[in-house]
Image (cartoon, rainbow, N blue to C red; front, top):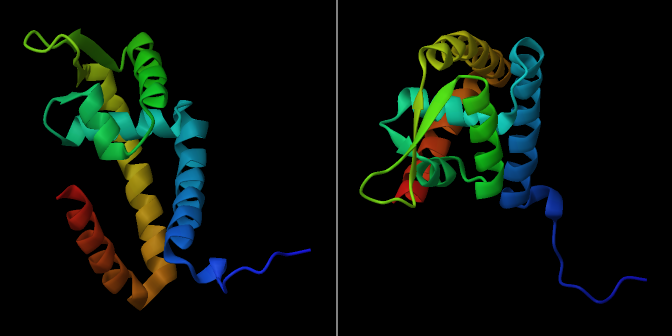
Length: 147
């Protein structure tokens, strides 16, 4: 028996839609790079952020990818063990762990980026004329989030 609740359409609720779509897209892309390189979603996000951002700490990565610190820490440990990145304590703030890609890490990212580009190209093709306005709206939302 349902309680007397206010009217609500979950399927058209924008935050819910974003969450479902994000999981769907992330999991589909992850399948491709996991099969080829055996890396996880957090590992992929860390690698790409390190490759295309200024030198970052674990805290910076956590903010940029909006992911739990423990997931990031586990992923950093795996990437370090595999030789894809190095870690060092920030000499000015010993609480910060600075990350940097190794040559092996850059080589991995060079192989991952074409997979991501192909995935976006397929998505762009499926969305056709809806892609550009959607991308523009999402860019605007990202700018708001980064303020």
